[in-house]
Length: 388
Image: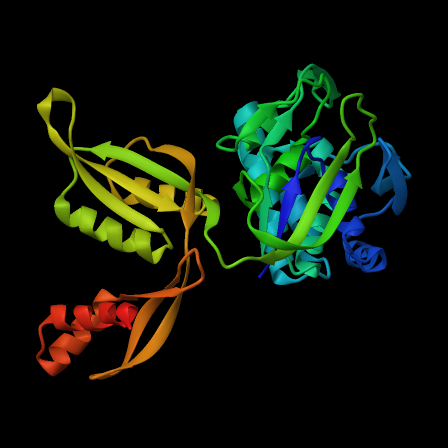
């Protein structure tokens, strides 16, 4: 599987991200044709080769004929994207990223998301950066995007709302739960558009995942920095079949006034919604009441959906959440011949590359009932495959 890693040693912005994709092989003419299908006017696109500290990369530029920014709402942007000549996946992911932005802006300005008028991120260049980047990821057939922790700058920057601190409120709001470091640079290193793209596209933030490197690309920023080349590096390669590190969101809440029957139903629908794991733990709560701690693990992009289910189907009024990294082995389903016919098992690839077979409870249960055999016999037979 083709994966990519964003090496954000100088932060991230939308134009740097697109520049890195172009430098790694994204076709500029195809990108222009794709973006040309959006109902946007008054701009032209350019790409140039530029040097930062003697490292050459690609600079992506959106030249605006009119310097005035349109103040578009989320509904306006949805219409623009929906009417573009884009795949369904690119449309959905682009709209999802703008919805993340709208929620953060709504919280900052204390307004409903549909009333938010995007300023900088609603302008032509920001729409192009977001849609173009999502399109570029699809075009280069990148199936998993990983990122380094994001280095944040400091100081102040001008915006449509006046002078605001760096990181911008929208930026730091989007980066909740994402690892960041202090760059020591008094400039904006992560823009709101860059933060939205990183949050919406990266599946994990941390070290470079195991891969066989195939391509690299450097996206140049507009500013020259004294202590580092102002570039975003993308490393593209084939994922190795080893232990994989990814990021998960962990949701927790404690309750002491919910029926056990409701909890059983809650677990079912959380798993049906795609939760990776659901655990109930006994806890002792205030006023000496016995209670239950609900722990749910899911992918970061499932956070809102899973939290919505917990709020809807339990009596909790608050949910804690955090992002955590985990290391997992490559797994798949396999079918093997058994004394009872074909049997489906879980195949786990261990670190050294050898397979390890594990029984699936539902499969073993059905075979045991059908053949009137003890279920442990089926389990032991599957486990015996590993000693052959």
